[in-house]
Length: 373
Image 1 (cartoon, rainbow, N blue to C red):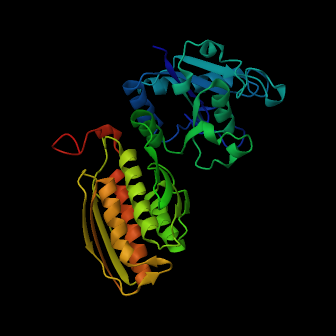
Image 2: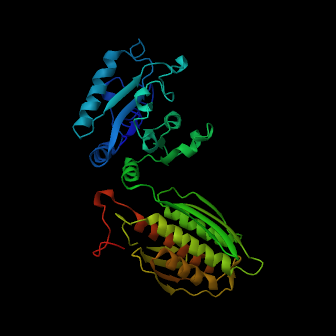
Image 3: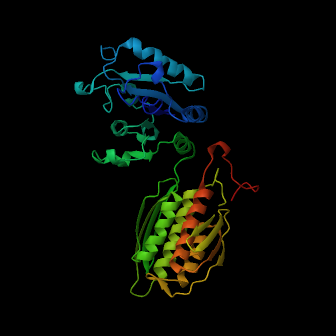
């Protein structure tokens, strides 16, 4: 089988890049990136990746960056990592300055010849780094990229967003992604009454793109994404000229199916999950992703509609969501303000989901004495 590779940047990825001159040329400047030991050690011991360090070291060997200031710190870094079981199969260092436009300088692939011969599984390999040039290197090599930044604005200029499969500053998230995979899904549900597209990433950052034709419903669905840390896209064309029923019910079904698919085998998840005050209201949502659908609903509304959404559809939405996601939902709400009450329920659902879908790769078991859920 072809080998997979993690092409790992050094400064800003393994160690903190010195903020003033960007040169790691003294022991006083050596500071390891938070959580890098535990997670790289885990990846090295559990997964079948070769480790290759790929780093630009501007002017190494010149008067601006003498070698005798570089190697002692670099070697100490390697020795410290090795003590935690983290070794590199290859170390590639480009010494050029940016203005040299050297073919060996990232994001160019001049140093990568060995890995471009067809003997490596580059499609399932990753470049891990903290700059857009690392993502561009992944693009140039036919790899995927993991960016140690939460802001991906720097990728838009060169249209690199599609090559970045994860953007985070947390090595825990990187190890989880590489070990357990991404938890994404998309569902298209088309009937004579509605045409619905839902996609989500359970391990996202709360980005939402939602349009159902019902403004208040959009606002409620956004709460699931924003407060659950879930990237959520929902696009609905429904027969609103008839009424709101089919749009709301079918959206719940498609969203529930999407959640169920994204959870996969549910290994390592917390499974259970939250009560939430919102001004005059107290909203409680307890849930169990145990594979059995059930809804307990204890909430009364005294207005016919909130926005364009009939209040009688709230119960129907959560029943359909519970059925499609195969989850047990217990919902209670009390208070005077109807808007606050239902918004509190959606927010509490989001927080309960965030708690329940949390995944622990160090205890990667199905959370059930039955062995499956």
